[in-house]
Image 1: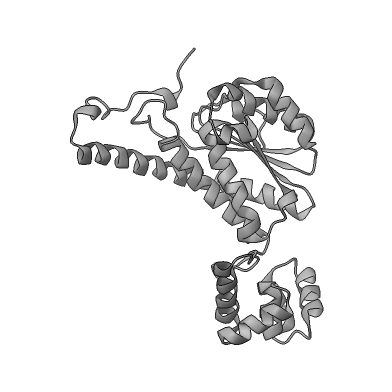
Image 2: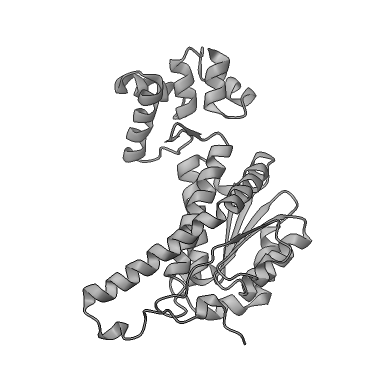
Length: 297
């Protein structure tokens, strides 16, 4: 079996275990920086993927993240953050991690080869034409991920494929292919490092742009956050205060009137009659706070 670039040997790996700790760390850190740098070449594809995902959510569909091993953990981390950061309903985000909960205790490699498990997981998820599937694999050849990708395409879902090897099998049939062509790993084959770093950055960019497309970002503020703890309630107050210019006490009062909705609280500060009126303006504005503020003005 031919080895892909993710299995290659790094030029500076020889004698790594004999170097001073700080020198070894310098080689490792340089590897991480080199991996991060490749994301720039994929920005156009990440933008296209974000548009597909936002369109799916806007139309009532779901985002389905599929992965195995370290790549699956990168996908899961992105998926789990979306409800809290951008207020996207939990039932609109699906995570298919090879092995499921068992992989969170023991990230055993056998699950990633299980095509039957992939078909079972995909069928149970009921992937359909309105969904957008984001399938990730460092090698681009992981059987579990390939099987879910093929199932998704067969059911008419949109498919975004992310891999670190050019010409990856995962790219076949994808609506958008995100190639993160990371250099060989300093620790050969340890794709939790360079490949995982590039994936994490790409996922961060992808989901943030999804939030922007959905109208959940305003001047760098997460205006659709789910304020379900003390820290986030304080953040919500500061966001309302910063955007509307009211004091923190007034921001807190407006958030109470809006039942915790940052967008509605800002619109109340801008003159909306009540929370219902604020929500109606938001609905007419496609949930964009900027457009809603212009409509009120």
